[in-house]
Image 1: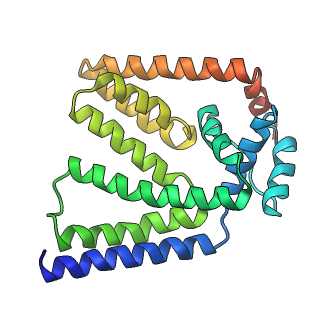
Image 2: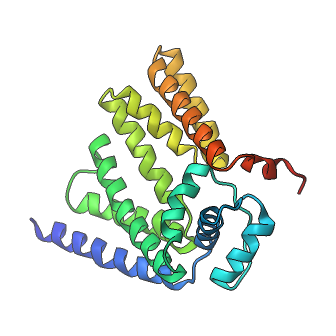
Length: 228
C-alpha cells in the first residue's frame, strides 16, 4: 500500500470514528420514537396511536417527539431493540448504523468502479461520510438503512436475482413517504422493459407482510386515518 493510500485510509478510519462518537454525543432524536414504537408493540399496543406512543417516548427519553409513520415490518425490527434498556438499545442502534454505512459503501464499490481504489476512493468515502452519514447518525434517522437496502436492490438487479430484488424493494417501503415515488418509478421502468418478476415479487412480499401485520395487530392502520 502506498503512503498516500495509507494516510487517506487512516484518516477515513479516525475521522469516521470521531464523527460517530460526536454524533452519538448529540443526544439523539429519532431513535426515541423507534424505540417507543417497539415498546408499545411488545405490550400489544398500537404505536400509530400517539396517545400510547407519547407516554413511552417520554418514559424512555425524558422528552416528547413526533408521531410514528413507519411500516409495521420496521416496528418488528425495532421491537428486537426494545427488549433492552433504552441506553443499551441506543448504543446498539449507533453501532449498527456505523457498520451498515461502510457495508453500503462496499456494496456501492461493487456496482460503480469509481473512484479508483486507493486514496481517491478513501477521500470520496471520507467526504460522503461527513456530508451524509454524520448527519444521519446525529439525528438517528434511517437514511443509512435506506441506502443499504437500495444497494441490495441494485446488486440483485446486476446479478439478475429478480425475486430477491423484489423482496428488497418491498422492504424498502418501510419508510413510504421517502421511498414510494422512487419505487413506483423503478417498477414502471422495469415493466416497460418486461422486467415483471421483481414487481410481482415486491407485490407478493408486501401482501404477505401486510397480512401478517393485520393478523398480529388488527386495525393498526385505523389510527392513520384519523384527523390530525
